Image (cartoon, rainbow, N blue to C red; front, top):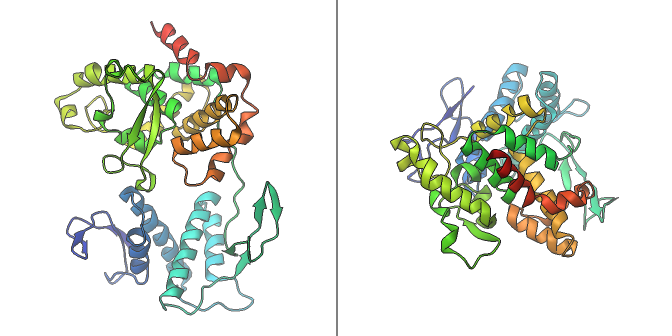
Length: 375
């Protein structure tokens, strides 16, 4: 059993699909119904828009089918009373062999979806697991599942404790930005801290989104910049607007007009705003590594998620002083691109930890002070 990522010659419905994950059996054949499931999951009903995520699904199924080979079991074997189901056995095997709980959870969830697909399309009569009714939450209180609230979930799911979000304090932000001596890296971090932009959006942000703020005197504090999924990578290919502070736009414009043009001639052909020293596009993994290296100087571990959480929490705290919390949450949700307000609401638990001084200086005095230090 192996995984092959298709080349340009692979087509479905006369559409070339390079990078599509293909599970290949020992005889060189496509593994069914894994192939049909991946077509359904990645291409049908909206599918998975980011092709960068396609291999993740393929490797998850490969991991499961390799377990089946190792255990000498068939994917469509019926469940036997008194014997752990095949998916439960996979869960135990994965955890025992060092796969993290969070990764095992994600893979088991995908395997369960695979079996549900197989049942719907007649590959098997029933899934090799049972269902339980999950509890629903009403105003923070756990309520028993019922027909109007609870959700049926596979009983083989892996429970993973919720992690606390990493929210940086002002001193941590100052130290972090001070450790990013490379001008490009520093501006990338600032853009995340002041807009909440995702890392995949950061590295694909088009150059033409940046302009000279002097041409827009009507905007006093910030510019609304529309993220167009046709021009860059956005989660779920959904567009939204971010608010770029006026002083940050000025810095980005200066970078685009001066420093960026000093890179290799290759940079002139690159459509993204940020380019490496070699004039090439950044990879998301590179941004993670750049931020992680600052720990040697600051002692604080920072990643792109932490910058997004920091923006959300501090901005929510500031807005809550002048708006009701519901209005503030809607603003944050729209800036972050959350599909559900419940996802945004988790930041409410961190607002109490943000002091008055943090609220006052996060978006303005903090960065002004850093600029003065750099001069």
